[in-house]
Image (cartoon, rainbow, N blue to C red; front, side, top):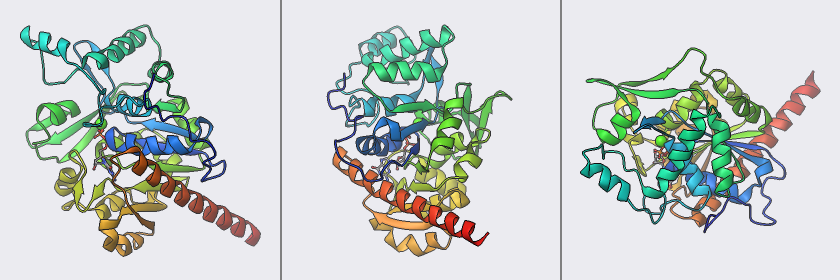
Length: 341
Ligand code: GDP
Ligand code: CA
C-alpha cells in the first residue's frame, strides 16, 4: 500500500553518516518532520517514539490518534487537508451511527475504522500495543520503527477551572475552549516506557524533538519513568511548533499563553529548558535567537513551515545536519575532557 509512500529513504542521500536518530513525536506536527526524516534515513538509522497520552476508548474501540497520524503519514495515506485521518475518506458508518442516536463528536472514518477494529481485537487477544502497531505499520508499508511510548494505559488529563477533562473531551468535544491550568498524567503505578523505547534511547546518538505540542504531545513521553533522564543524556535538537507567536494548528499557542503568560518560540525553548542542546527557530522568529542562546541552547534559524514533502525533507536535512554537528561537538568535547584526565 502507500500510494505516495515515503518511508523508504531516497537513494544516496547521506546527510549524517551512520548516525542513529530517535524522534519524539505527537500527531500532525510530529508526523510532518518524521516524514522528512524517514525520507533521509533508512530504518536502521531512525526510530520514532510516539505519544499515546491522547489514546482513548470510543464505542468499544481502542484509538491511538497520534500513532495513527504518524503511521498514515509515513504510509503516504494521510489526508493532505487535515494532516490526520486517511485521504479519500468516507463517513457512512458515522452517518448511520448519528441516525441511530450514537455519538458523532469523534469523526470516525470508514477506512480509519478498519485500523481501530483490528487494533482493538489484537489488544484484546493480549498482544502489546507496540507489537500491534508494528503489525499494522508493516502491513501499510511503513518500515521505520514506530514505537508507542508505553504499552500501559496512560491518559493526559487537562486541568481546567471547571475540573479535569480527558484530553479528547477537552480537544474534540469542547474544542479547546476551557482555560488550561495544568495537566495530570493518569496511569497505574507501574506504567512505564516500553523496553523498545528505552532501548531506542540507549541506541540513539541524538534525539530530535519534533515540532509537536510541548505539553500534550512531548511532555507525556518525557513523563514516563526514566525517559527524561535518558533523553537528557543525549544531544537533543528540537524544532519550534510555534511560528511568529502562533501555532500552525491546534491549542499549543493558547496553552503557552495560559500557562506561561506568552506564546512564542522562546517560551517553548524555555519550557524544555536544560533538555535541549539546540533549537530550530523559524526565520520569522530570528530576533528571538539571542534570547534562546541565553538559555544555553545552540540556535539555528530555518524555514520551519512544512506543508508538503519538499519542505519536510528540507527541514529534516537542516535538523540532521545540526544534530550531526552537536554530536560531533559533544564527541570532541568528550575527547578533550578525556585528554585532560
Ligand atoms: P497533534 O497531536 O495532531 O496535535 O500534533 P502535534 O502535537 O504533533 O502537533 C501540533 C503542533 O504542530 C502545533 O503546535 C503546530 O503548531 C505544529 N505544527 C503543525 N504543522 C507544523 C509545521 O509545518 N511546522 C512547524 N514548525 N510546526 C507545525
Ligand atoms: Ca495528539
